[in-house]
Amino acid sequence: MKKRVELTKLTFAAIVVVVLALGFVAGTRSRDIYALMGPLVGVRISTDTLDLSSLQETYQTLKANYNGKINDQKLIDGANHGLVDALGDKYTVFMSAKEAKEFSNELTGNIGGGIGAEIGVRKGQPTIIRTLDDNPAQKAGVHAGDVIIAVNDESVEGKDAEAAVKLIRGEIGTTVKLTVRRGSAAKTFSITRDEITNPSVKSEIKDGIGILTLNRFDSETASLTQQAAQSFVNQRVKGVVLDLRGNGGGYLEAAQAVAGLWLRDKVVVTVKSIGSSHDLYSEGEPTLRGLKTVVLVNGGSASASEIVAGALKDYKVATLIGEKTYGKGTVQELFPLANDAELKVTIKRWYTPNGKNITDEGIAPNKKVGLTQKNLDADRDPQLEAALKQLGATR
Picture 1 (tube, rainbow, N blue to C red):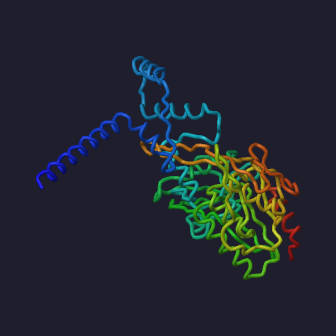
Picture 2: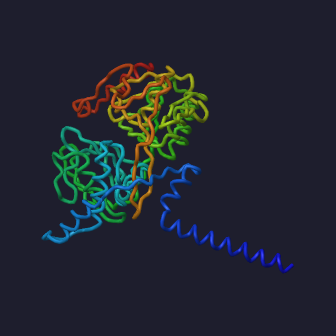
Picture 3: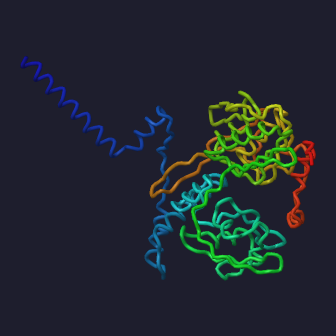
């Protein structure tokens, strides 16, 4: 009995020594241990280091000699931006904490404090294109077609839409003064900014054709498109327009679900990385299968938009109308960094069902139809008109 107790003590002591040794090694060589263990759980870690002594020398010289105030965090963010930008891949980017938050909000449609209006340029002026239902702009009486003259008494005449939007957005609960021209009259609105969530999907029926407009591919897109598709079927539409113009993409899973409205268990995209390749299939119920379909695309249709457009074109279940797409045939992944920063890294390339990677080339429409500023100023949409005509819209 005594020998068993002594053996237990020896065993315990040995375990303590091993644990302490591992703790020491982990503390001094943790990166090496993570690199060895990472692949076992699907995590990629590099143990390579970069000689940053020249960067430290630059910083120390600045600190000692610069005649002004130095913000260390801005320098750190700037150095990270420069390091990643030097790769020459426009899709691999470093994002500071602020930029990471803005990116997340953009992807989810949460734009923070705003008035709930879509703004574009018409006849050289920032103009209200549409107001979102039950949002501040609509409640205040702002109308589609109102030309924005000033924001908080600062003129925006001749400026682009982004400049106007930047002035309009602000803290939730604060007030923005919007001066517009409606016809020949000037009108001023005092609007309290609120949290604005812009849904990724909008649907309507026009001349017997269901029009499905996707602004992005987010976590809600799959369910919203399925609901809209079922509504189209219930109302017996004779065709469908899938509008992907200006849609810069989003989640791969959402693209699989949208393609799944027309395709049952078909390869939507093949994703390849170094040493591996796997197919992603359409998902969900093909509610719109068999319905004549036109997909509207342009130079702003990218990534997930191109995945859907490419799959529907390759399987010949839809006709593409508009202009050549952007040409983004790569996949990025987000990696969290210290201080809430993030790194978006290109990790894979993707291919259409016919085996084509469209990087820098894009997808050509079956029927090329342009859309000019003159068309927009005249409130015309030749691309949508061509789609409705092809689908035999009834008036």
